[in-house]
Amino acid sequence: MRAITVVPGKQGSVACTDMPEPPAEDGPVLVQTQAIGVCGTDLEIINGEYGSAPPGQDRLIIGHESLGRVVEAAPGTGFTAGDLVVGIVRRRDPVPCPACAAGHWDMCVNGRYTERGIKDRHGYASERYRIHPEYLVTVDPGLGKLGVLLEPATVVAKAWDHIERIGHRAAWAPQTVLVTGAGPIGLLAALLSVQRGYQTYVLDRVTEGRKPAMVQRLGATYVQSGDFGEAGKADIIIECTGYVQMLLEVGAQHVRYRITCLTGVSAAGSEATVDPGRLNRNMVLQNSVIFGSVNANRHHYEMAANPATSRPSWTSPTPSPPSTISSAGEPNGQGLESPEVTAPSSTRATTWPLTSSVRSGSISMAPMKKHTAPIRVWLSARAALCTWPVTGLM
Image (cartoon, rainbow, N blue to C red; front, side, top):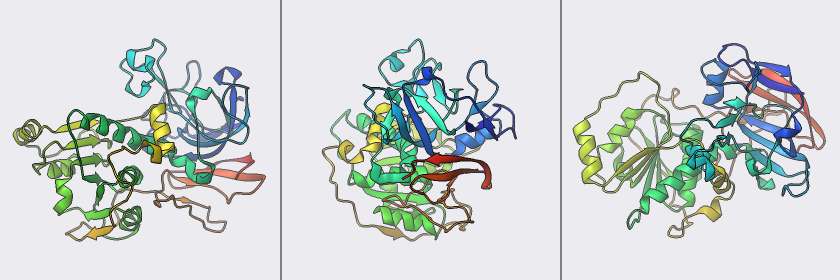
């Protein structure tokens, strides 16, 4: 079968190669790939900065953001042919550590976990893959191709899960949320915030274009960097850029019991101006918390797949009216990237907006046909790397 593979650690090795069919020991459920998302982690692997192949193999099949359709499933797995599914990325370590033993493999403490398409295990960017049912999640058929956004959504589902767990250390009634960054993760974080009924602000540097428009369509308020206004008083901050200085500027506000979750990863060697004394005073005297969050376990996949059932009971499902706060913004054009899902230029251009118009990854594919259609995955400058026939598309 055809697959997108790399030689880990070797820049420029990405290629569409022939790979063996997935072995039976990979699991009793056979899935046909429908779409693959491409994020910064994939680009790091392609650039040779990260990743490791399965033991004894030279090449790694990449792809951890996936959408597939079940081809066959053994009795008792809970899946049937035709189910639209997403594969979970991480696998528990073999020891296992206490976290992995409890199913919290996203919190593995000994580092011996594996990850599909990233660390010691082949990913989903192949025509077919096999998988064990405990690592497979059903997606609402109504989402169609947009189900490929489920894995990125699990990142913020976990962030919200942990924010709420921390919040419950005492009586807690948050009202406002600030999300820094209007890229795919930021927009998904804002979507879950709006669904929880919070007054939601999304901060980014651009002054016009699709980012402010998408934020407003979410039911949130867009804030241009330079003047935080009411957004600076948020009870909850979800940082989605990795730009630490922005976080420190927002942190200057003295907000009691603020919970800040970091999901963005900063570049090594970056510099920022920090007043450690003020940071300490704000944290201690205001009973505030800053924590980091990455990856997800099955619970978070289920939260992302069924957001309506995961909303806390104390929140209202009615979102606040959208608006835009005007302030001194930075020049447009160099903000955080928010890649689109589009059809190749050789076909009729099509976009598929989520309920919130959130788009993630860097995916391009031919319009869907009833029986057979080619699926193409574009990386980097959208150069076609791989084409294979996919049957049974929606």
